[in-house]
Image 1 (cartoon, rainbow, N blue to C red):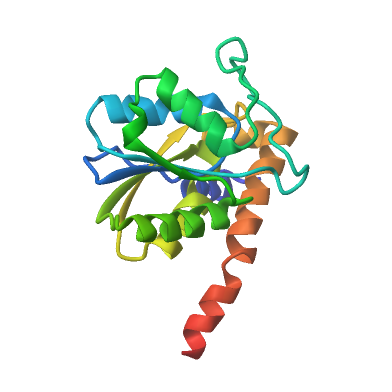
Image 2 (cartoon, rainbow, N blue to C red; image 1 turned 90 degrees about the horizontal axis):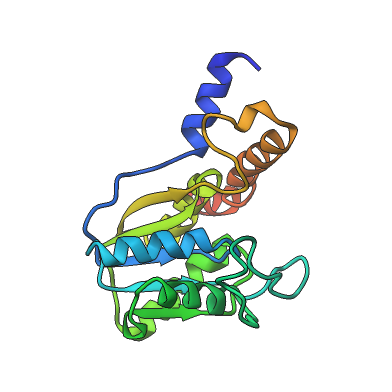
Length: 200
């Protein structure tokens, strides 16, 4: 691919903001403890008083597949992403009273929509929120969570995932496959919403 194309795709997919003081930290589901560790770091540093964890089981396997790393630390019999990431948060200093979650969603758009529904039930209406996600997942997370929280200012804070970064994704078959897959899903998963808005 030409450099200009790589740069354009990189800038679109790898969305990222500097963290800002917010009302809440939001986490889509996942099995990488680094997500929970980053969220805990932000909480300890005072960026937000609350953390909301989302995620049930994999839509592909129907179960939680276990921690992808640091299994000597995170080795519980976790049944959902939410249970796993909650344990990561607690082991990294977040007090249980600051943690909320839902364990029914199976993919990113559900993570966002179910999070919104749960927060509405709790009477929590954040004006600002930090979304912690994998770096190559950033744009889709931003789109999904902005769909669910249209009036909330979101700050996207990322961690490395699967060894894929904005600097190396185009240098391996695996990186290209993952990033181009994200690019495709960013279009596929939002076409319906955009068309509906045009018809209103």
